[in-house]
Structure formats: C-alpha cells, structure tokens
Amino acid sequence: NAGVMQNPRHLVRRRGQEARLRCSPMKGHSHVYWYRQLPEEGLKFMVYLQKENIIDESGMPKERFSAEFPKEGPSILRIQQVVRGDSAAYFCASSKRQGNTGELFFGEGSRLTVL
Amino acid sequence: QQQVKQSPQSLIVQKGGIPIINCAYENTAFDYFPWYQQFPGKGPALLIAIRPDVSEKKEGRFTISFNKSAKQFSLHIMDSQPGDSATYFCAASAYSGGGADGLTFGKGTHLIIQP
Image (tube, rainbow over all chains, first blue to last red; front, side, top):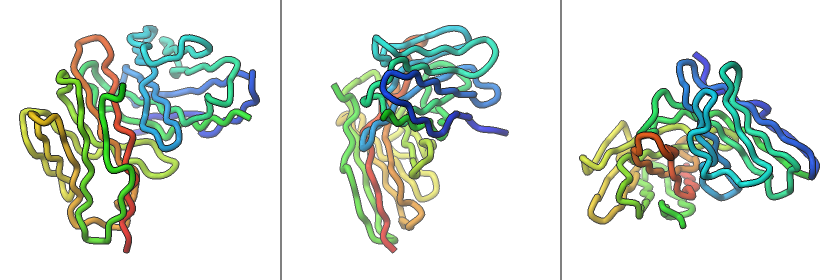
C-alpha cells in the first residue's frame, strides 16, 4: 500500500536548465496538490490538479512553472530556465476527494538545488 | 498576506513537559484545522485535526484546543518525549466546493524535547 511517491528525491540543476519533478498519488486518489517549502518557511500552495485538469493554479508563478496530471502516468511539475531562487523542497500531496482537503497525504518531497 | 500565524518559531521543552504551539487565523471561512508533523528529510504527516463545531479534540498525547470567537487554535503535547522532536505546522482550509481547496499553512514550529 504505497504512499505518495515523488522522484527524484534530490535534483541539482544549473541556472537556465529545466527541472521536472514527478508525483504518483496514493492508490485511489485522483486529486493532486503541489506545495513549495523554503528553508524556515511553511508550505506554500502552488497548484491543484485532477486527472487531465488544472483546478487551481493561483499559487503558481506566472512564468517558467507549469504542472500537469495526465490521464496515464504521474503528475509532473516542470520548471523551465531555473534560477537560484527556485531552490526549495517541492512536496506533492494527494487526496481521495475534493473539498475540505485537510486529509492530504504528502510525499517525501523533491529537493531542488540550483547552482 | 499570511492567513495563518503560528508561534513560537522554535521551542525547547524538557522530557515530560507540555509544549504548546499556537495558531491564529483571519479567514472566517476556514472550517478545518489540521496539524502536521514533519521530521527532517521527510514529508509532513497529518497528526490531528479539528473542525469548529468542537472546542477540543484529543488523540493520544496530542490535544487541539479551538477558540472560534478568538480565531485561535493550539496544539498541546502531553508527556512529551524526545521522539516528538520535529517541526509542527498548523493549517487551515475552507470548503469551497470546487475552487482553491489547498491548505494554508503556518510557518512552522521547530520543537526540541530534551532528554
């Protein structure tokens, strides 16, 4: 009974490169959330997706960031032309249903370092 | 605008003591208040949660106290143990039925229980 799986766990990129972070939700979960955590900060909501749909991307930077959750396969958070300020831990969470989503199950995160 | 304010930022308590972490919120639409526990290098894990129709909820050694009129809630850890040393996040969410269902997190409290 696997939990939320994220990979890679650690990713190092040079400025200007692309980063792709993947998230497989828990079995039976069709709602996926991405959060970003900076050192000594809480988790900041980025985007909420269901299969093939972006429901809310109000927390996503307007440029360079995109997310998808295809019909088949994991959800992907893509960061183009990374900058040093993108260095953070990115957490994916999933839930079984929409609404009152306090019952989120988090993965162990992908830690991005931009050199 | 930070919608959930958490304090203290860090806390050191002797084993057996009762650490108390406080959170205050602004959005009166919030109706679900979970606490998450995060160990270094891991993702946050749901610890305990409360809804505003009750003033207190207890699960094992963890208790949430909720004051709706003051828009405040707190986490108490009874008989604290060194294994409780972690970062604790309060959070809040509002059922919107289709919009931004993501949690809003406090900035976290780094708790150390000394043996």
